[in-house]
Length: 121
Image 1: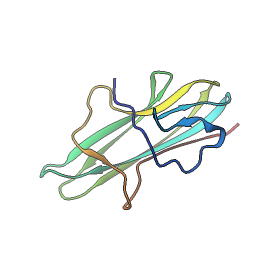
Image 2: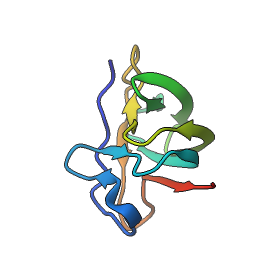
Image 3: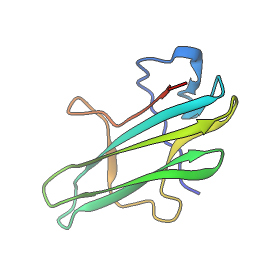
């Protein structure tokens, strides 16, 4: 199992479904939700680094992104998924369950790694 990412700079939390201490969104209502997650990776080495993140709904992988930082550059990737979620379901972003990657996830004034979701209907 991967490590759950905790997004601590919470801008909006209507319904108080997101819990920044755990990194888990607990659906306040049943419905169709859109989830988006973006990650920035910091380049440190001479050969580049990589990272993969997974969208998890109730312990099951629902989506994933992969990014690779080339020599001298930071990398970024965004995932988008629509899912039917029941009230009380857990939704979160974790590092890849088999390959944690070699890069450092970055979130600073140059750009934020983020996790967002909203109910369609």
